Image 1: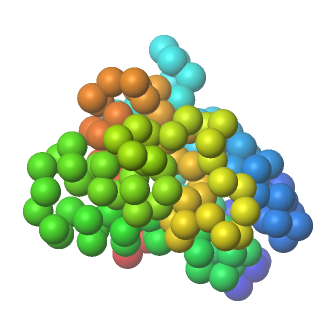
Image 2 (image 1 turned 135 degrees about the vertical axis):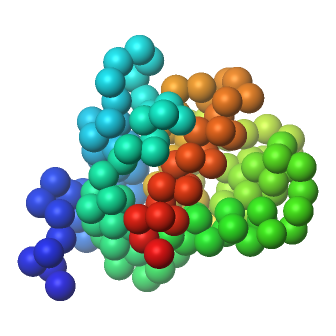
Length: 158
């Protein structure tokens, strides 16, 4: 129930109840970065992603999922990724396929934070915009960071 919900995400919960998707997305990124970022670039790198607090991930996911009727959240994203991985593409194609599915890739290009769709009509899994927490968005290592992040989500939420 609500009592066990992580206190750290109460502001996030309030934003989501009002369906303030953009502000909730920014708050989600702030929470994740604050939890594990230890310096260097601001953001969550692959090493840090493996240490994100499970309670925090669970609480973030529950709040997004409940506010969006199951459309948005980390578990939904992880499920789309698992389905994409199961198709057996190369790693580049896996990420592109996943990105297309959740609306983070248009054509061959990853969208930037300015192109995020902050509406309930956005594709399933579009929010929260997890690429926004990365430190290596422009390099090949973005995929490594994603893989570690969603492995952590799977470990924590399944």
